[in-house]
Structure formats: structure tokens, C-alpha cells
Image (cartoon, rainbow, N blue to C red):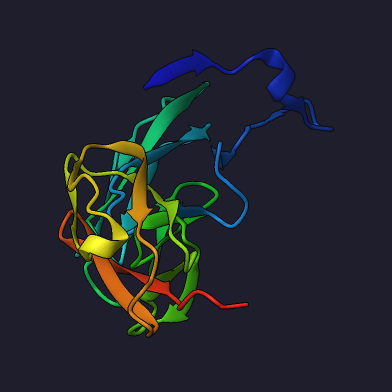
Length: 219
């Protein structure tokens, strides 16, 4: 916590010679619309500034915590703090959302939502699975190609399982960060459209990545 004395510029003089007290509480460094998390994302932060003591609470304490939960601000000072928001991994099939309510001289709130999906950027999600869960479909070249899957992991360890030999067998274990996995896809000489799927799992949350391949066209 950082405490600082209130500068004279923040004190307004009343018509009768008295002084108005300054009262303000606000979050800052928050995206428009509040804070959004992926399913395996369990920590983010923003700032909170207040000229008054405050206490934070939420009705979603079964999956959402934060720190600090309260700050005492003496008269004539203001505080600036980093506010850490910590949802648990979302292993449900549904998006969940909650408000963090800050009780102060002027009450404020912070909207938090968490997707049930992992942060998969390639392929893009194209079909619903269950609830708010999505399937991600990659349609690869019938003649064979080198293609890729891209995603960001927020837990300490994740794995990619499943697939078939014709779609390539990529690395299976990943650490926190951005990853691009290459697939060395074979030409489809079966005479039929084929499909396989990979399962990406992080923090006990999984998404299905479907790979499809048509038969090459003949001239």
C-alpha cells in the first residue's frame, strides 16, 4: 500500500470559510467492461485509489478471491494499491461472472467474468460444444501441408493429447506462455473425408480441437 498526504489542490474552500473533504474511490488500469479471464487464467491485477478506507466483498467467493480485502486510509491521506483478482480455474461448461463490491464513502464495483474456454487463437472457434464451451475446427489441405495450432497457457503445465498419425503427432507437454504447434499433415489418399481431434488440457480444463481433411480434387 502507498499512502500519501492529500495535496492542497484537492481541498475546496466552502462559502462559509469551512473546507470540503475530498472523497473518491476508483479502480484504474481496468479494460472497458471489466476484467475477463480465460478458463485456466487465475491471476490478474488492476489499481485501486481511494481517499477513504474501504472493504471489498463478493457473492462469488466459491470461485473468486482477491487481495487486499480492505485498506485503512487515515484522514488527510489517500492510498494507491495494486488489487489482485484470483479466480479458480473454470472447469464448468458455462461462462461465469461476478461483481467485486467496494464499500467506501463512495461505493464502487469491479465486474469480473471468466470463460469456460482456453485461449486458443488458431484455429478459431467455429462450433458450440456444451453450454458456452466451444469446439475449434481446423480444416487442412487435402494434398498434405504443414499447418499449426496456436494457444496461450496460463497454468504451470498443459498437455495436448489425441490426434492421428496422418495429422502429425506434435509435442504433448507445455509450460506457461504462448505456443505454436506444427502439424505435418499427410495427403488424404483414403478416398473419404477424414477427421481426428486433439484435446488441449490446462489446469484440469479441456477444449477439443478438431482437424478435418477432404479428399483431393481430381482434374
